[in-house]
Length: 557
Image (tube, rainbow, N blue to C red; front, top):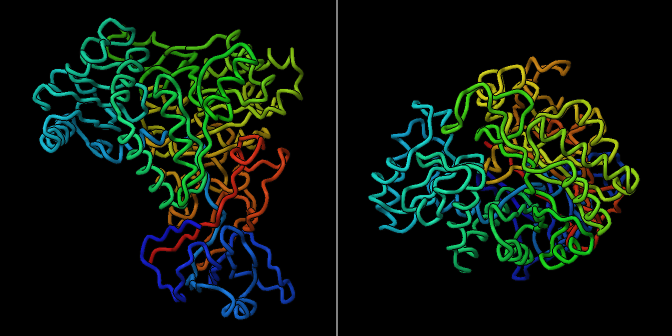
């Protein structure tokens, strides 16, 4: 059981030296639980954990009979107990690097960011600096940092400075030289890299990690996830972000005791079922999906859109003509889906812009024409992000059973009529981005995640709303409701079926509710079959469907 408590909670416990013994938790609110002693009809407020198994659920009267039969008694003092939360899109090594690096997410100017970089250089005494999560749309200058500026701040040192979306970066001259990016597509001449140049710079920086470095970063990320009440993580790897050693190491670290379970995906294009099965078996992944990029991101001007961006990135030429980049063709998508489906693997990829989504949908339909719709549906493929889908794309996803793995906090950070999306796309298109309500209405299964370190996991919890909408003015969707009064820690997406359906939420001890999440069973039992998924991963053995422990969430005082 993982416990998230913003403030220390009183624990009235018997001492027990045996880890994972029998524990009684009482005096709480159990989300969606059904009592084993359903005589009085009272709502269950207590449960007994026997190791990792929920042995009993009931009310306070029934709990009194367990006091002398357990190793430990915990007074929940009104805390909410839910199933363990799942984060359906993370990058663990990068998350750990971010926790250890220079966080620029709160900076409001180039000068402020450079000051933090210089401080880090002094602390690290010339060692490479990882400074991350900047967003030039929040800076007074409205532009990225240049190599010349980083050189001055770092005294000529190595600085790798990825943008918040992890699709572009600013590099010091030393870093650019190490990565040899000047002759690669995506170098803008001033120190900013996108596309192939960004991949080269990222690989050059990450390949310097030693096994000890990687263990440190992954352990940091796993501990942070556990502290946030997350018990299942979907790791997304790809060659432009990391390597085979990293994805295998992440999976191994996730098998250690006391950390969240980890399932892994690898983004690599294939066109042969045997090759797909061999690669997936070698890496231990559930699918060749995740960060197989069909396009880039809005923030870096690399998401593939049908109407031009309002502006243009540095080095891209005249504004008003830039539509981003499509990295996959219809035939490539079709062949990849054919190979993965025949190999019993999940296919999919990173897809954001409407043009890239149309390409992806056309390729999936072509695969379904050859294999049959039911064969494609049975594979439970998944797409990541799905930010600007047309009704036709949503219809294709629903028909073919494609999961949408989405990040609601993107809308909170960058959506609306005045956010970064509006600056890139215009208010009308920005308000139509990430239409969760439309996805649910179309019958699409939705998995929610953080894309950590792109967005922090703690911020993601506040972004699930009763009507699953984006911002006001988005066509036929109802307006966004006011944010819930409950602590952000209680509305993180996940649990047995994160479909964002507006089912009646459970009450809390303070009379507020947990919006936007179905009421899942609290009991930890065997993994469900593929017809009742817990997440967009097929039931292909224990790694694909790990049992999840309850999570305790305490209201702030």
